[in-house]
Amino acid sequence: EVQLLDSGGGLVQPGGSLRLSCAASGFTFNNYAMSWVRQAPGRGLEWVSAISASGGTTYYADSVKGRFTISKDNPKNTLYLQMNSLEGEDTAVYYCAKGGLSVADYFTYWGQGTLVIVSS
Amino acid sequence: DIQMTQSPSTLSASVGDRVTITCRASQSISSWLAWYQQKLGKAPKLLIYKASSLESGVPSRFSGRGSGTEFTLTISSLQPDDFATYYCQQYNSYSPWTFGQGTKVEIK
Image 1 (cartoon, rainbow over the protein chains, first blue to last red):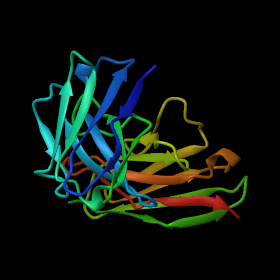
Image 2 (image 1 turned 90 degrees about the vertical axis):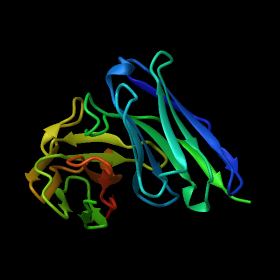
Image 3 (image 1 turned 180 degrees about the vertical axis):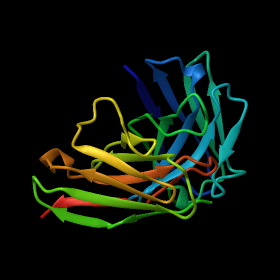
């Protein structure tokens, strides 16, 4: 059974940093692209970042480019999102999502989400 | 970026109704479209991929159609468990992947 366990969210001040983690199990992690998708309170879904199966290629939404870094530790079956220079607009539930064999794919499974609140 | 526009934003329906949600892309995305269901406080769940392929385990009352720029999700007979928000997502061009704004299906 595929499981994705998001963690690392919390309350952080504007300008601060946070690292999110997503522990994956139930599938061959190093064969699949992964993404982070966020949802601000009461709003829709917004794709944030994606990484290829090998971890060698990364993609970012313009809204987070230069501030967020996605990485994938295949031996540990864990996806990360390092978030720096956080802003109020980054307040959201962050979900990790399992992609396909190709990075250009839909999202088959989602984690339960972890809440990030950026506030002073 | 490819923009995805869903209609309606909210849909009021009764159990047993046939409901249809429309999703339009700002440019052709072939059949690279997925549909998700999200219940309050929960993660999205994949329903349909490649515009019309039903994800394993999803009830057959859900169906998807379309190609190019216009797509529909139909629930043939609405069940109590189906009251939720539905999102379309294009994956024709990555970076960025884009979602529709969502359609909330509520009880009439």
